[in-house]
Length: 214
Image (cartoon, rainbow, N blue to C red; front, side):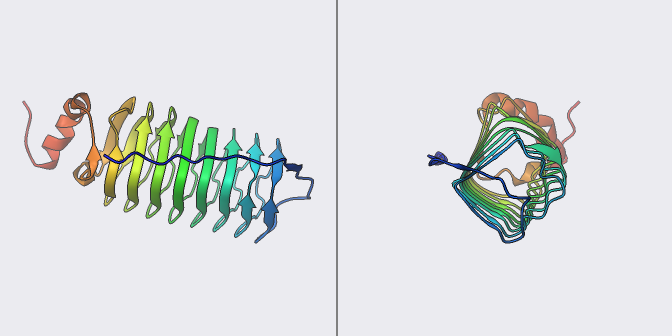
């Protein structure tokens, strides 16, 4: 079982962002975004390199095809953040409070999501490689038709997860605090679970193959 490679983010001295707002295809290099309300703004296609985004509101913020590289997002909050086909590489997301984040078709590589709660996270058709979900709560996350390689769930709560059509390789669920799979129980090939998790998921496995447990 190959372990996920975690990001090693070392931010340089940062400049405070004092712009009027995000711009489509903007270039943000070495900025600190602190306690800003970015709700409804359009940063589609923008590049965030060596940035710290701390305590910012992201409700319905448009960040489709944006790129986050060597950056840290701490306590982002909001509903309906749009990150369709975005790219996150060497990124840490800490204590997020987000709902309905649209990450379908995105690419995540060397990413850690630590702490916080994400409701209805949409990762359909996304590509995840070297990604760790650690100590967070994921409520009804949708991984439908996504590709997961070297992905770990550590102390993480998965509630109502959808793994329909997922392709997995070296996916480690053994250390998850809770695993509740709503759909896609037949797509766990390439994952590792614990003996205790097998017992918890036995009814779902039995239902999948048409076995009645009485």
